[in-house]
Length: 251
Image 1 (cartoon, rainbow, N blue to C red):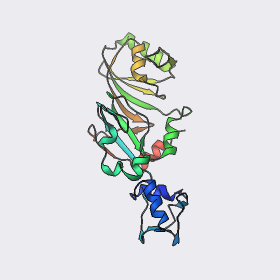
Image 2 (cartoon, rainbow, N blue to C red):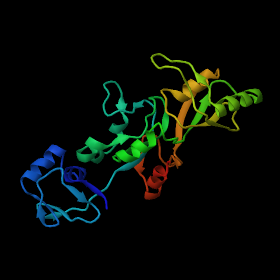
Image 3 (cartoon, rainbow, N blue to C red):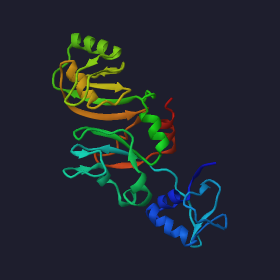
Image 4 (cartoon, one colour):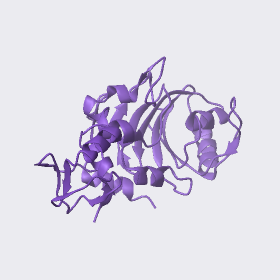
């Protein structure tokens, strides 16, 4: 059984905002299992109840889950006076009705960071993945200004595996990052870093504290979900059921 409010369901299905839906309900145009429902807070079993509006039976779409390959120079916000936003890259169907009111991001990326972004209307999943009690791993591809020789590799690995002190930045306070994982590549200035936190500018601040500078940053996975390599920057697609299950597998 999957229960949800009738006003949320109808808004999700494109009948307008919840205010619009309340007008439809007051007009006695909504039937659930053949009975008129006017209460916007009425809970339906979307798996089993039959819902009709003006005599037309609707097939209920459940939560929205999208993966985007975020480009640089767009911000992770609904509105911004200076820059384009990631929401402006979505089709109109994801910027109206239910989606307009409920679609949000699971974790943000800086304006100059590329890579995996997850949009969803599933508040429970979002809470699960961003909760401080949840150690949800996020992996980033990192290009650094300075090369890492063998001595630095050992130093980086020791510090990152143990967790270490990060000094304050601007209005952001200092903190000690949790143990993380670094993976070196064939290029001596490129690494993969996996962290379980999401502090402000964390990856950049970690390498700055180690005496290096991040010149390019891209998130490539979140809780085991890999960014689809076929997505160009700015492109997106729906998640598969298996991918949603993978995100939900966080403990």
